[in-house]
Image (cartoon, rainbow, N blue to C red; front, side, top):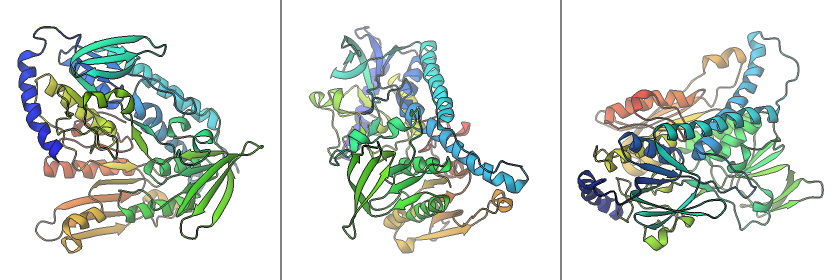
Length: 498
């Protein structure tokens, strides 16, 4: 909180300086250098260039532990929402094929999914987006450098090429937008050697086959959901609860549907080791945290979805004195995205206390560009951001979970309105709708102010955007976003993920 309090007055002082001294002597190579070519960094750089600033973007992707690498655009475009939603769509089409028979379509007795065809199509689309981002930077006169950036001081960036060639750039302001990468549980023998992460799954040429997904975050459940949907034998290993941080009643509906859909869950269990057998299969040993009993099974692939770590270690932040949260490793920022070092800012997933969502990073990046150019004083509002989890039965929410509402207002201080419903498209197909549900959490008394809204059902991502718009309008927010790459509508004033 102290950091947030310090951030605002510093911004005011800096903003005055920027208004009167920007480009005043031309002593820097650039007005702005952005390290990181993901959603937030690209949005900030392009907006700054549109406002007349001289801008450079440094972007360099370290290959994953398995050697997977990709192009410009960051997590969302390459190994996040875009490929994830396309593969989710592939799984939904599989369900639609099953429903089609009830609607009169004459289908063959057996249908099967071809991973290679899907993967090639998805990867080609992602490559087209990589190229599109490069073209946009060129059109907007932003200098793109495929260099690994680090800070030498508050005005100087060191860029290293793949071959080790050094380039030094100076700038009046520097923005860090390097995002995060998936973690490996390094304490588990064989985890990194034999496992993969979300950095790899979307770029596989061959089907992962029988897969164990370790973790119960939205990344874990989304991947497990589309694996099951395209016909793969899929198991999710959960240490404690699913979708930590989300409403737990809704999380239960999501996992109940997934289990009915065909995904296996191993609850209250932790992996102990992964061994590669002579057959090439991966033998996973795990223990039940309640009984202590050990179990084993074999899989073709093990996908680790146990959290993400911010990409801060190679930036030289410690020498510069940029304050980090010691627990998370993220950069501490003020409400104006300012770090503890003047002229250095941080955006998106790298920043402490920010939602790890593309639309919010994009909007925050654009607003920061306007402030740095002295064109505005508007700050990003991160409250009541809509989020969707793209599991087989989608889950969309905005505002507080029931648990958080109780914590803030007391159990007697809230009232919950709720209903189960059956989507029309489930009727003829005779699909189970017992997990299709909506609830609204309100303050008790008065005008019953809405605190949170939660929805499970088809197209939850689109549905929640409508409710989010109403909630945002009611409280005067600046925009909405989405954890899994919702495409916000124009009236939210935010452009696209990740």
